Structures are given as structure tokens and as C-alpha cells.
Length: 479
Image (cartoon, rainbow, N blue to C red; front, side, top):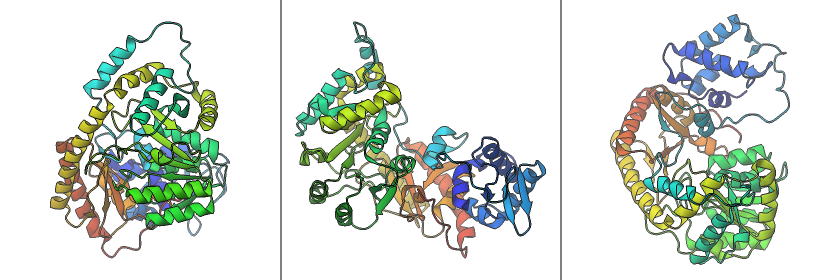
């Protein structure tokens, strides 16, 4: 197992109290006992894991030795270290590996006494959400089985009307309601991507999409160069292309109108399903979002598919997303969703109907608030970490920050020990690049942002001293 992969599985191992070697041993023990490190799994060398964790070699040696004494590890000089119970280097049993993406690990194992800068999303439900649920309660009743695999008719109609009002003629038959945008992407991957098929993506991009494609056993085709190269790569006719055109996650950039039109034209020419992630598309700081969404460039094309969600526009706990596509694909996705969950919650969908009517105002307020917090975070970084480099975001929720030297995954481990969780860029970039980048969200209140940057600066001072003269950074996890 590569050191960076094991570091990702270890998560926030150093965020507790007590000697570091005991904290590391405790987390390794849990991974072994839970079966995430099966018998026979070969572990990194002391030096390699210490570098990956930005920890001292003595910490790793002491942790390994403790687990060896417990009978959980086998260590032999010249042969390495592996999990007890199987031969050295024995392969893990067949089956899908659990996610090692830090975004999901931080959600599955919520930080304790750690400021959360690894995930991005609204941190509190606005009053309008509470009012919407109260209104939704009044709509319940009457003859309704409550199962709507394609979505509640009222919400499908409301979203279709909103698309139509924005210049994209849409019927309810072109809308599928999902449990968040994440489920929409998962359903599309299941419907369109066979194991081993190519999926074209930007590099970097949204890590949640990469995890879905990884679970689908897709062959990722990342494009790091100018966006024109993305359009050119469509000529390979991948099984699917995934694009964030507006308020990109993680960079906050927006493609120019001519770039968007060029990509859509290429997708239609080569008949490649183009999935446009519009979850953040309306959170622009530099002016209103395009009056006509990307879907409006070819509203009747089979190839152009849009994914949207209320989780970033309103609140993450409102798990309402949708897919806009042609009716034949919507019907196919609805059949898949019926097998998975029989349909999203009715009360949530009825609350979403209430929110759709005031969504423009909610988005305007949200974008204004995010722009203010973006400026606050940028000012704090310039003052306390002037050597870090970034371009101001034009929208969205995150800054894409480059470290002057060192490996971002190792720095993230050092930051955990200073009480702040940050996301290293390697987990967002399937090309193997971005190892010197961090994704830093600006969704929190200004006081939390200020405290977070202070902790990052303190961690950087210690990390930078160790990084000078260090060996080249370890490779990123293959996603």
C-alpha cells in the first residue's frame, strides 16, 4: 500500500489527545479490526509513512512495534511490515474498496475539536427552509402512496417551469428528482458507464464525482490543459463527459460563453453524453449567472444532461437534487432509482416546491454572503500566509491555493495536529497533479475563517521548516 493511500485511510488520526504514536496505533488498530486493512496487506516502510504523515519516524516505529506486540502486525527486517493473519504481500480479498477520499472520511468520522475546512456547504439552514417545511406539512394528506421514483409531480413541474422561464423549454417528463446531486451523478454513471469505459473529466474537479466514477470502475480521461483540449478529447468518444462549466469546483472559474458553446457542439458532433454539473452554477460573484444555462445551448439534444441541487444553494441537509435530460433517459434513470430507494422523501420534495418559488432571492442572498466571506478569507491568507498563491474565485465556495513547496497531503496531516482539517489537491486531480494545492472553502463565518487561517499558518511554520530540503513529494492516490 502506498504511503499517501494509507495516510488518506488514517484520516484525522492525530487530532486527539495523547502521544502521537498511541494515536497512530489506535487508528491503525481500528482499520485492521474493521477489515479495511485485511490480513496480508503490506504497509509502507517507517520512513515512507512518516513522510506521508508529516510525522517523525520514531512515531511510526513505536506505533508499528506496539501493534506487533499485540499480534496485529508482522515485522521482519528486510521483508517489511504487513497485517497479521496472511502471508506477506497477500492481496486483499475481492470486492470494492471503501472510499479513502478525505471529503467522505471527514463526513463519516466528524472532526472532534477540529475546524472543518475539508468539506464545503452551507453550515446552517436559513429561516426560509423551516418555513418551507411548515408549509409542506399542510400539503400532506389525501390519497398518495408516497412512492414517486421519478419525483413528486409538483416538484418536477416546478423545476420544469423554472428552466422554461430561464430560456430552456422543459417539461416535467424531462426532470428526475434525486436525493441530492450526488445521487444524480451516481445514477448517470450506472446508466451510461460500463466497467473500463472512459469518462472525460477536468483536472482538478469535484472529488465526489471522481469517487462515483471510481466505484463504477471507469477509466478516467483527465484534461489539465486549456479547456479547448477538453473539447478535442471528446473526439475519443468516451462513454461520458463530466463538466463543471460555471463556478468551477475547486477553482471558482467560469468558462467563457464561446468555450461553453464549443464543448457542447463537440459533444453533439461526437454523440458523447455531456453531464454538466450546475450545482454551483448560480453562485457567481462577478455578476448574475448566465441568463440561459448551458442546457439552453441544445435543450432538445439527447447528449446534453444537467445535474442540479438545492444543497449548495440553500442547505446541505436538504437532500434534493435533480437531473434534466430527455424523457427516454429520465425513464431509465427512474427505473434505477426505484430499485435503489423507491423515490426521495415526499416532505423534502414538497418543501423544495415552496423554496423554488423564492429561489432567485435565496441565491442572490447566498452569493452575496459567499462573496463577502471569500474576500475575508483572501485577506486573511494574504496577511498570514503571503507565500501561498491563489487567484480570487469568480464564484462557488472554494479557493484553490498553491503551496510554494512541499506536499499538500503531508501538510494536511500537520494541519490536523493544529486543529484544522484541509483538503489536499491530489484527491481532486485524477491526472496525478495538484499535489501542491489545497482546496479551502469560505462557507464559515468570518471569525471561524480567521481562526482557521491562524491554525493553518501555525501548522505551515512547523511544516515549512521540515519541508526545506525534503525528498520529492509522494505520488497522489490513483482515483
